Length: 127
Image (cartoon, rainbow, N blue to C red; front, side):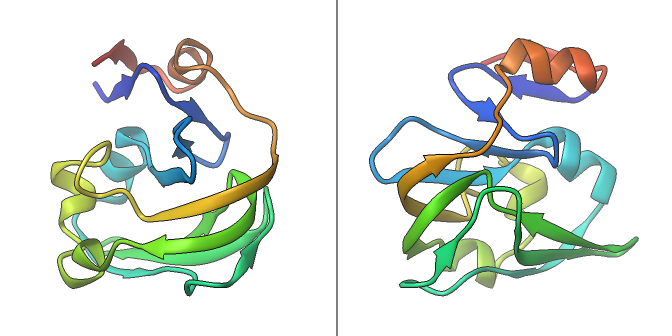
């Protein structure tokens, strides 16, 4: 069963966002488990403006290609080059080393608590 980390908020499209400034964005373990072995990650460029609920990149696994949606609106201020170089981090550490990008947030999309997201995705909540 997939784990949902507390202290983060989640979009229905399976992205998480933290409360840091700038905010970190990544994909949940629920998404990572569903994707299977991630082999490629395409992220927005630094300076790009992302919009909550809109496509901002993609994640490719051995099973499929999935669009990446931004959970927030704002300017991308940093991209995690480590996950671009080693996309398997999405599978091994989705809430840590596999953060995808950081955004100077101007607006949030609809977000769920860890408990709400876990309940919708048959997952467990834990750190």
